[in-house]
Length: 373
Image 1 (cartoon, rainbow, N blue to C red):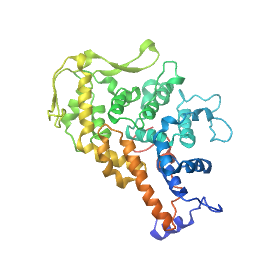
Image 2: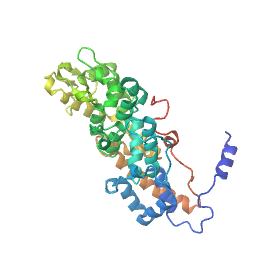
Image 3: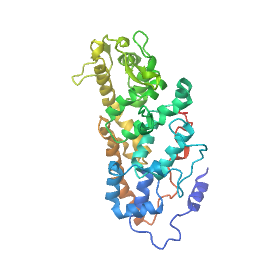
Image 4: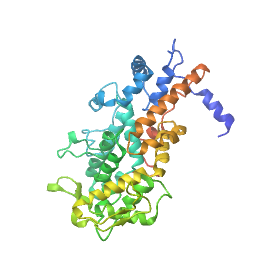
C-alpha cells in the first residue's frame, strides 16, 4: 500500500460521532482508554464511564473485583451478541462453545481489563487445544482449557480461568500455577518429565518465552531446569479428572548447576536435597528466572504493546520482579493517554474509532505462528 493510498483510506474512515450534537470534553480519552484497556465500548458504556471521570474509570478498570462478574448469565438473552450453539450450550466440554463464551465475555464484560489481561496471558503462555484434545479427547481438551470450577463436578479450573484469576496478580505466583496446570503439563510434556529421563520442553519455554528471553541462557541451564521439574506430573483421582501430582520417587535429587545466579548471594547451584523438599528447587529456579535482568524489558514491552503503549515498555520493566506488572503498565499507559489524547483534542484530531486490537479479530485459540490451535 502506498503512503498516498493509505492516507486516503484513513481520511475515508467513518466517524462514529458524526451526527451527534455534542461530543463531551474527555469523551475521546475515555473511548481511547477503553479500546486499550479492554475491547472498546458502546455509547451507553461510555456514558457510564464518563460519569466516573477519567481517574474513576482507571480505578474501576483496575479494581475489577468490586464489579460483579455476571456476564455469562447474559448469554442467549435478547440484545446481546448471539451464539451459534444448537442442542444446548456446553462450554465446559465443547471447545467451539468455549470460544464463543470467551468472545461473548470480551464484548459484554463489565471487567474489560481483567478480560484483556486474560487474553494477554493466553498469548504469553501459548497452549494449543489441539494437543490437549489429541492426548485426552475433545471434551477433556475443552475442560482443561476453559472449564469453570462452578460448572465442573470435580471443580476443575481450566487454563483460561487460571489466567483470569491471576490477571493482575503476582507474576511468580502465576508462573507456579502455570507449571502445575493440567493443560500446560500436557502441552509441554511435563507429565512425562521423570528422573533419569528429564523432558526439557517446559524448562526451555520457561526461560526462552515465559521469562528470560532468547540468548540469555545456555543449554546446560535447560537441562538443569528440566531436572528441577522432574516428578511434576499428572494423576487421575478416581479416573474422574486429571490434576497436578508431585511424584517424589520420580524427582532428581542431585545438585543442579546454572550459569546464572539462583540465590540472592549469587550462588548458581541448587544443592542436592531429599525428594520431599524438591519443590524448593522449583521455587528457587522460578524465582531466579523471573528476576533475571533480561526478563523485565521484553516482558514489559510485550504487555505495553498489547495495551497499545509499546514505547513505555522499557519504563515499566522493573515491575516484572514478581510484582503487579500489569497495574504498573496500565497506570503508566493511562498517564500517557491523558497527555497524548489531550494534545490531539486540542489540535482538533481524533483517535481512529475502529481501532481494535488484532487479538480480538483473531479470536481465542486462533491459528497463528505461536502454535495455538
